[in-house]
Length: 419
Image (tube, rainbow, N blue to C red):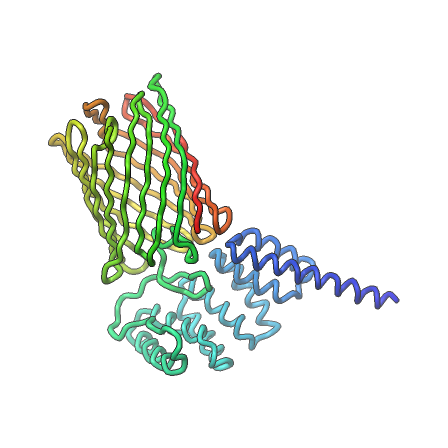
């Protein structure tokens, strides 16, 4: 009787775990990685031999950049099933994503011998060979790609080109397959959502009895294709008891060699505090090894004057982080002023992020047709948190020291809907 009860309890426990795993898979589809990780660890604490849960845990750990922990989980799985090619692929991905392509190659070659019909193994093998960077490995990647085209003719295999070029640092896509590194623009959309609309408000308190600033906005973005985006917004702001309404329209367009063009224009009929109109154009260049360089110009026409601003930004992506430095040079009233900005961003759940920024420079403030120049310092943070695949919260906090005139402390809150 006790044996029967034990069997029944075991069956009931397994059914509960199976139902729990279905919920966890749903969390993974919605990119709730931290939630899924906690649930999987709880399952494994009760049943350490649940290899399906351990496999999901290894994957979610690697997706979050916890490569050492993921490596341990895959090794545990392989001690039980050393010839499981799914586990071998996962282990190779971990080595590849943490920058060890040469360590991934022997794992992939062994897995391909066990399962030569798995195209994912071949694809990652090509990418790992190309990422090593020497001519011998690149030639092997080209040869393997040619074989893959014949073996899997229905799939796209333009991974490496016949002429060796510098290969960018790689990351993963939604399917867990490594692709070229995604910059901030690429990470602004989930791949299955091409439209975003949003609204929000901001509030700034000024010291020395200068009052408060308020602003409200509505915005939209539409992606026609990767790096081919149009966006716009309508903003209303109240500053120093003056009200301005401003339209903004812009877009990104992909050019050859992975260069991206950005153009933007805005206009205001009131232009009490903001430009009557302004135009911006910039180009972003990939430099390899997850570095990007952006340079551009912005022309602004105010009620009392015009200004021209040149800017350059260099940014680097590594793991789930981005660091960037921007230098600006602004000419107005025959004066040339420089500004500096540094920022550090962390991405999580793929398209959510938080950024810390520091900046200093000279700011021109227009009030009823007069221009005032201030040496300014700013520290702040902003971010976007996707609650689920449809809704996101946007936030910011910051403090600006406007020379001796005043200190501005503010925050903003908004939402975004993707569809």
